[in-house]
Length: 538
Image (cartoon, rainbow, N blue to C red):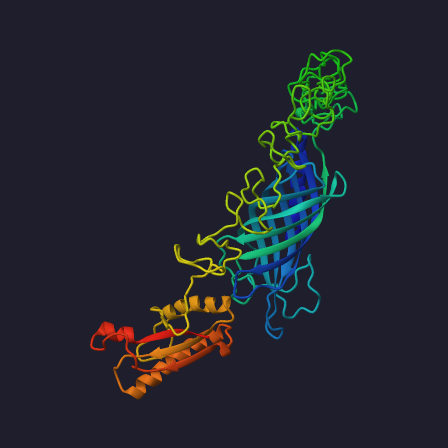
């Protein structure tokens, strides 16, 4: 009985909308049928997903805003053990929604809605029912004795896909919130508060406002209601004037004229000098007749050098090259190489140049011959501003030949650029920097730095042989000092051997405190006696 009331009420609403459409210019009525999946949620256990079916009807007051009424019938059932009492809840929602289309005049139109209404429901005990449960005939007996109802608020979104102008596929996801609901919809004291609905169906549109001149713009909105048939119109129903020049497209022979450009009766831009270039883009509006012009209305300049062809004596100058009044490339330094090819455009007058317009650099050291004081420097050698090989330590030996390029300034060097250590036969040399940790034979960092100078001498003079003698002060026993001096002399010799010097060129001995060179009764004297002596061997 309730379903019949719902359907009857829906029919009355459709008649109401049809009558409303007749009174509202611009409205469009639609009627639809839908089939939905429904689930009750919000309680301790969601219900089974069951079905609704129903009708919906509405009217659009504009292309995007409308009012919709929905009436449905269906049933749902809780997730419970089949051996317990079985319940079915019949649902009859009636809602009214305000609908908004997010697009207009498209095949695909998404929409959203918000509204409310009443949810009629009847919880029934169907434990003893053997027939299948359907939409229209309620089975079992009512648990509450009568149909119940609650207010609901619903919202959601969906879309229409139009197969034709009047027939569309409709689908939506709808959320129904039951307001202040405290009753048991499931039969198991489980109070559901929300119904989720996934709907699909078809909608038929009919009615709508009148369009006298059949231009697609309804009379209510048409500012030009007598537009000739077949003429394209704008949203106001007037013939389109795409370029807004005052001449409608169907009369306009130049329908893309830029905004604000002065046009003739054909809608084309005025061309005062008749050169084929309209005044608004003509940068040379007074070009003489029959003069050949470019797209800007100016005499053609083939090489784009700023000198028109009829004046240009060098009409093939490359693009972007600076030219003189005759259209020829500028040669600032008058060396015969135009500036755009001249990699050295400021070459002094009279200087001999290469094909790039640069002064010749015979030894290719980066210093031109006319400035190079060492014009035959070997290739790849770093040079100074005068074109001469660098001598970093100013010892007279250029860096590319200097095996000791960081010799102290003022130090006498040999032909290899290394500090000269004069070794003489039978005359020992003592180097102050050769030191050891107290009581040990390990060379200090300072000692290795000092011995590097000796190493360079041995490398530069491969015929030289050295005797290395170690000495100590008289502190401690004789045997201890002799052993220590011997180990220190061997440490020096091993430094040279490990650096690549042939062991046959070296010998070492330890003499302990023998032959002191200073008194051992002072700290300074003992320090002098702890020494390494170098002696050249014939």
